[in-house]
Length: 461
Ligand code: ADP
Ligand code: MG
Image (cartoon, rainbow, N blue to C red; front, side, top):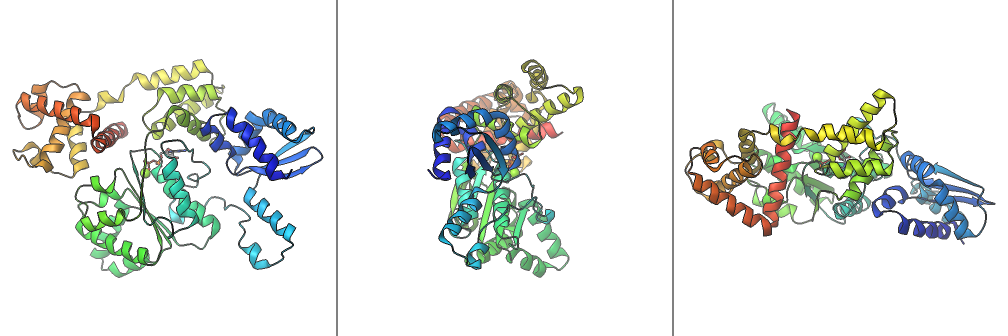
């Protein structure tokens, strides 16, 4: 049996005994780099996986190795090392190829934290991204792009609600590609920053420098593209930037809180370009994935979080991952302060405090209105006005629906909030939106995004 075969059999045993999310999180990119006289070295992609395997799976893993090899295993060590490197090296030695140009193409190590000049978060890597049903397609597409930039999907467009990992994936692509080629010209920018810089550049007569800067990159990552909608000059500039990069087979990756067709005031030519490539969505993760994410985040902070406690947290916070992290941070902080280990009871108590103050209470009708009009990019005066144009009547109905569903306002009160409309109008709007939301996927998605923005904003205040 080769090392590779031994490891595959061990993995097969684990795969059936632990959850899929845990399996992908802790066992992807692992392998055996050394096996000799009962001494096994398991290589793992990062320190989190190392800690985790040592703490949680050491004895199971040792037993499994013994079963598979039918020999006693005396010692198992875990080393942070890329299995790809090990296997490639072995292949090369066995073929006795000493061509230095070949070894040059081998990735010998992952780069530590990437330079901050890119403005990317060092911990947003593929290794720290937990794959579950609701993000596996986006994850796979992001990986494909990182492996074959400019070839597989260009552009890649990732969309989905707040706090579901879009920025994480976007930046993971940059990490992955910088790990292969440090000289790569990577540009990560939010669409708001792009807009502001463009406006400044034009004002100060530096438009040419701006163009040069944005058009001479190998990887262009733009976050939250929905914000360029309605900004004509910026869209125009972006259009040309995009074309230039695309023509030169430079990879472009974009994120947005919704699919291109649902971004109002987005120029048609941009919309059609976004749809050239690949559109993938991320949605709210299931319980199992949420729990695995928590365990990953706890590991990153060197905080030991037993699985049952992770499950407890994951089952009481379900909306988005940012909130999940918020809960975890609070739990870590409180236990650090008291210098105690978390228990089911101590965590339950903290969670009760967090969930006892429902965020919904702090949302006002004004906030509902302003969130919705920003989402649809329509004006307040028009929304409160008389026009029945669909462009206005639809957001108006959504506002009325949300005022009823989320704030439990009475129908007359809702009519009042919307410029003195009749209560029957509010009732009608509520019925219409709730009926449509049952079958209309796009509407459902709109409602989820709006609510996320609504509660996230009111939390920040
Ligand atoms: P978005 O850009 O979609 O609003 P982010 O990428 O900022 O969301 O994610 C919010 C937080 O949740 C980040 O800390 C990120 O690392 C974490 N996160 C989201 N999805 C995952 C995942 N699948 N695995 C690990 N962490 C995740
Ligand atoms: Mg983001």
